[in-house]
Length: 55
Image (cartoon, rainbow, N blue to C red; front, side, top):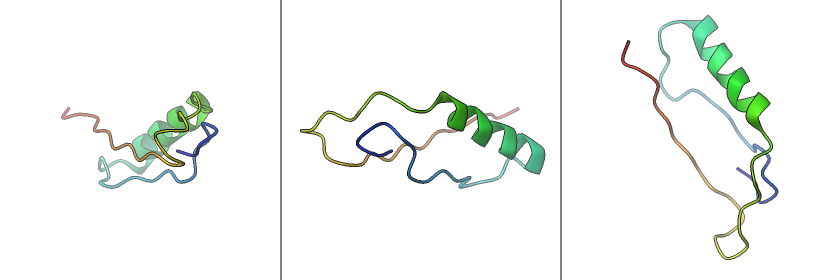
């Protein structure tokens, strides 16, 4: 995530096994952006990793 709350890079680290589901999840995150800006004392970029499942 960039300092202004935008997404610099978005990718799937481990597929769910369904390319369609993976793309839907990426779309949800893209639609949620922009996020609140990063506070200056934290730095210029943040990295988030999330898991969905198991199903």
